[in-house]
Length: 108
Image (cartoon, rainbow, N blue to C red):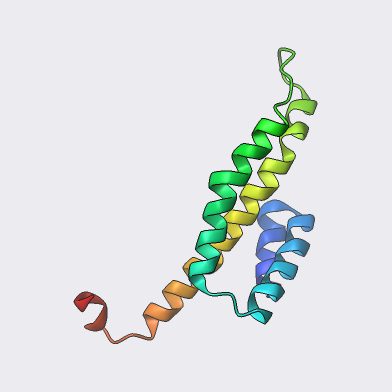
């Protein structure tokens, strides 16, 4: 769990790292299945991110403007959360496949 936080902190900043540790603790403690992780990530990316963009459209006054990116920060954080959930689901899937016998995966 601390590795997930360290990786998120390296990639997205210290605040994301702290949140990643808390999310990892909840996922492990609640024994959330991989399927649920994928469904939640899909809902975040498919529903919540577009709604966040609609609720905070930002204003374009011409040229580079810090306020435009700042207005879209919520959608970015939701997308980072969804990508983190998908990364956890991918890790679980790869780890589960590593324990299978070589011929099993080809039969499915």
